[in-house]
Image 1 (cartoon, chains in turn green, purple, blue, brown):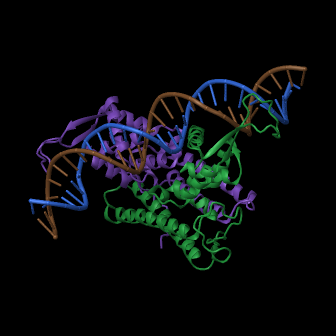
Image 2 (image 1 turned 180 degrees about the vertical axis):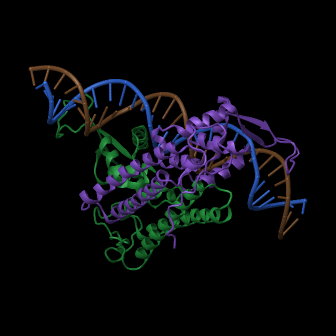
Length: 210
Length: 210
DNA sequence: TTGCGATGTATCGGGCCGATACATCGGGGC
DNA sequence: GCCCCGATGTATCGGCCCGATACATCGCAA
């Protein structure tokens, strides 16, 4: 999962670890609080070993030049890495639909073709619907044998699940009908170079924020 | 975290692993989907080694008797285990306020004294408020440089954060003013036998479910 | 009677986390 | 001029937890 996120960010521009972590934290938002260095650096090493990225020692013309001596390491994606990124983007393991996985995939939707976007959105919806049904069962069937706090926890969970399903419904509707790429470039199946930075479409479901 | 959950469930009644897992899944609801056996059994072994629980081989008078031959293992909490549970319940590490940690603590609120409940609720609120502020910053400051999907993800995250803060506010208000244990038995500091099954108080914030 | 789904116990490799250590840089206080 | 502090930056280690996998029993239906 983190692998996909790193590859995606490095596709935009080369970066060093510290920067990567900050971008990761802001772009993944809710679904992934803040990546740990104890995860980041081993993962970077793994990606380097696999050949998806390269580590280049400290750019000499850095803004704060840093008198060498353990300079910062700049990570850059390779051609193989871009291919790997495309594969991961379109892949659909079960981990694609848990909180972290979905968040990362969603964050790169502007570089994903519409068919894949719909597949992921619908898979996520199914996942949350299952959670919702489970919670409804507990609340109706076992209402009596649970204490008040546990019940309240279930209620809050059910509320969040229902809300997320509604959110996903709106996104799916938007994707399907007109308002989604479609017009500009049609549906190519996962290009290695996805036209750089032309975000295909604004979704914008919510307009009811008070 | 899982340690606390297991100890808490075994305090109600002895159980074997399979049962434990199911109880775990329903009681922790949203904040902890379904515990893996690859986690559960090693943890049980750890608890046994520490002396918090005992493993007793297959109760002979089992409903489906199971003709011995690798019978089910029933786990039971020890006196030390109950002490440990009380300590964990009242402890306040940072992991107490992440999704999983908070969910587990909350699920046992009916066996937690009011002061601790308030401390945990407020700690969680602070945590979510920080997330909320971070998301607001991103949405106001970096609105232009993010693509539409990433923006939508942040918006949805902000919405969920605001909603959870409001939920916590209600719970905190309820705890503070009257509607909370107080009346029935005052505030003992973590009794080993917490009056078995007298849930101290129904919280019930939401009444606006359509 | 065969086979399948639920029940049940257990291990293994690996991802990810928090704590920790160490080093450099810019700036504010004195 | 000096020092300390907070932000920047790289890296490791122990440990929790997960998914995949293996194996065994039970009740039931085809």
